[in-house]
Amino acid sequence: MTLKAAASLFCLFPSIALAQSPSSTSDLLAKQEDDRWTIGVGASVKDDGYAGEGTRVRPFPLIGYEGERVFWRGLTGGVHVIKGEAFTLDAVLAGRFDGFDIDDLGRKELAANGLNADLLEDRDDGLDAGLSASWRGAAGELKLSALADVTDSSGGYEFAADYGYALHWGRTTLVPSVGVRWMSSDLVDYYYGTLDEEVARGVVRYQPGSAVVPQVGVGFSRPLGEHWKVTGSVNYKFLPSEITDSPLMDPDVSGAMGVRVGIGWSF
Image 1 (tube, rainbow, N blue to C red):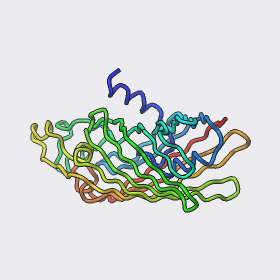
Image 2 (cartoon, rainbow, N blue to C red):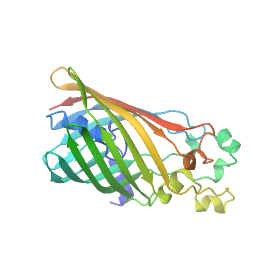
Image 3 (spheres, rainbow, N blue to C red):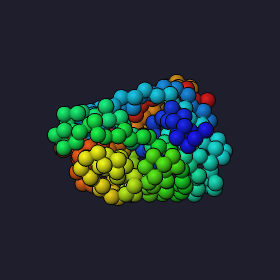
């Protein structure tokens, strides 16, 4: 199986993690429960700000597993290399769902930005691999991660820092979080710039280089009876000028929002 085929298989199982890279929100929600398995269904709604694309809605199967060493949180899976009460080091795989089909973007909107849709290429989803370290205590959880594309979709990498704190109201758990991501030039150029093959066809060159993306979010979990629970997340990314100035983006965009919600049976 090729790396891209493996990534395609991996991408069949998105979940309610706050972000594509390992986040403190998804970690803290997972650590609030004693269940090993969660199986259910859900839906994601997101608006990335691409020209004429609008809001994307995608249903998904919700699958999660929390083992002593191995875990699977839908978008993220991995192995606990070191697992202690306060510190954890994980080797992780994480799906990256920043890809899009040019046909899903607006031809009129792209033309207004000076782009001919017929000369553009689709952007592929990817699969990242790397390490994630987290420190957990009474003040919440801090997570640092380093991930690199192993499918050669973008050939890029990112470093991320996230902080989350779990709050409890009865049986409801909320995890507000803040984070920041540094995305390499290869990663940003692929998803928000114009490609060399597109430039060769006459498309204007736009290569924004690396970018820093802050974000805020909140995750939630609420039991419904003995085994069922509803979980979800809302996040907002503050897009920098390197991204918002892209001719692939709507001219008035300043951020990107995503919402995920699911219902699952835990055991």
